Length: 518
Image (cartoon, rainbow, N blue to C red; front, top):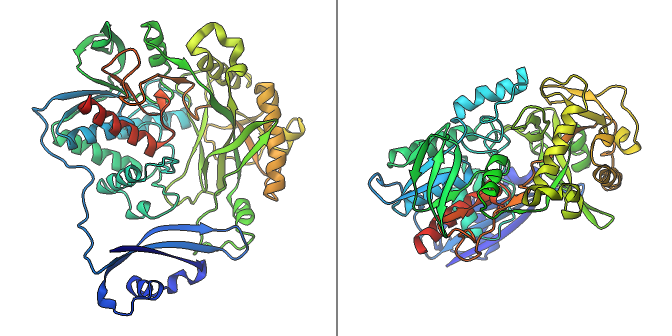
């Protein structure tokens, strides 16, 4: 039989815990140690709600039976001559769809508009240092998707625990640290995730799959209820039998293509706000009750939600020891996001603080129909760019936190991790008024919940706008097929069915299962 037990202990005593089998013997009251064939830690989390910080540990013990052999979540086999599945996008949804296809004996053919991770890195350097945005290769587009160079967080709200475990095991199969399967909030880090993506790509190609870079979907041809072919780079027409569309939340041209081709899409709520950066030492002090110990505790994170006039305002993609990144996908717009290296050892902590944008909020753009929410999002990003006189690159508008709340100009700004540079701006006046007002009230509430959070040592940078897709691509819940086209499978964040690396990967894998079933 398999039994679990948990231990809650002050963090300074964790290093002194006895061997797992002895722990199992004590906690499960089994005196005969020979009956315990194996015992291992399966989950670890911190509890810092009180001054004495504790660690929660969950163990799994095998009693009177040997543990099953460790399995590889993805079977890698030759599929070079197998039935094909075409996939648009090499983000987590697309890559894990490709792995699942190989696992099931199918040949994936992937088209990615951006570049491979190594070539993509040079374009990111241009954004940061020269403030030049490549519309096809940036923080959002390219091999691995938006998560590759914006943190690699593996948090998920998915309740499909078996699927989550398989995704984590798959990342470990391709080189991730085994601790991601144990930690309550697993994180790979921007410095390590690219190599894992390379290993996945090489495995797909070795098995006979294809990954094609600099290949952008430019048209879709269909008759009645079935896609017949796709066009790549406006010059190559390819017949397809099944198409997985995994283009991510920032592929505006794909949404416009679908709309132009009268393939149904819908405007959907999303979230928009700012990115706030504090000194990491301050967040450590607040969260750990001044008991921070560099040797025992990781840089502190926070997660906070408040209601303002019946609307939610919440933290998003919080990055301890992180960096604010320029994530525009076109010139003349400003977009921010955050990332952390694996050690989370930068001196700043940043987080998106966002409010929900609903249909009533984008009503001024209703003439755009299904693209109304997208046009609202785009308008805010362009206003951020234009708020800085003679902005020729990626300079971002910014304001000290208390100045933002009080509605006053900042004479100067603290140091900030945003590499292109920040400029003192009345950000509270550049944002839509209802967004700024909700954020003001929320920051005041945050300061009451986290003593010390509301400070002018913190800086507010605009705009955090790519939290999720402002468009959904409708599909049948059971079959995952588009409601109009039976062989189109919209998946992941771009289609409106996922909210991060893990959930997008799960969605891509499920699409392959449905293609086989359907």
